[in-house]
Image (cartoon, rainbow, N blue to C red; front, top):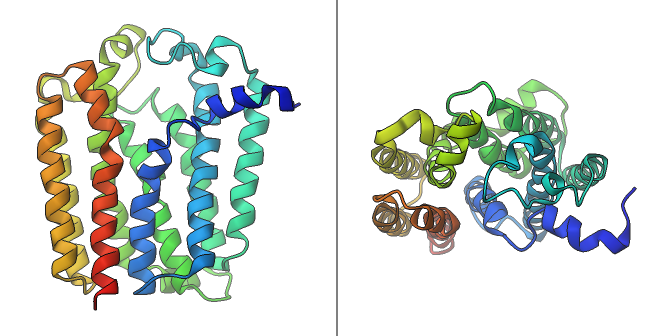
Length: 298
């Protein structure tokens, strides 16, 4: 079904040349992994979560493009995607997505039972998101859960034991991990609303539901509110988990980036909104760097 001669098309399908997507998933996951371990988590877990993040984001692209193929052809930015244009068949995309997801699952199998159990929930949310855009006014909230599920999985991998039970998951993943997931959801709402602002005119025409359309003229204010909620809640949770001044410096540096994003999106231009989205991974990296350096300098 998959042919080597079509490899460049498959790379285009999984957005290999646009790493911002998987970096947005990676930084909060790694921040949680460092917090859960209390230090550098070791090469094995680092490799599992880096490779697993890349594989699952790539699988998600395959599912998303199949689900959205009839909508994407009406959007200027997405009309040339391989599935939408017919360069890659639906069957090819689904087979590739399944193989990538199996690769990620193989990595999860090297961790522990609590992490494996959580991976099924993560997969379910990943498959749900592309279809949420048909019925949910702010599908970015569903994406936020999908993009944040690496946080409880990181805690489970660092702290989990050998037992297959809900109690084992609860013991490995404290309430703070779920609170960090909820907090990170606000960051996803911020950057994916910026992303949705790029396509607002096309999405209105085809009847797609997005946060940019739902928020209307309050979109810019809402984005800045999402950034504030994310950074303030991560700061409070991080302090409660024992992180100190270096971590707070990272939060402050991320807040400065959020202020710059306001300058990019305030006139709602396609170019400014898309640039704000594309550079958002640096904001996530800054928060992660504050976590990692704070723990290293203890």
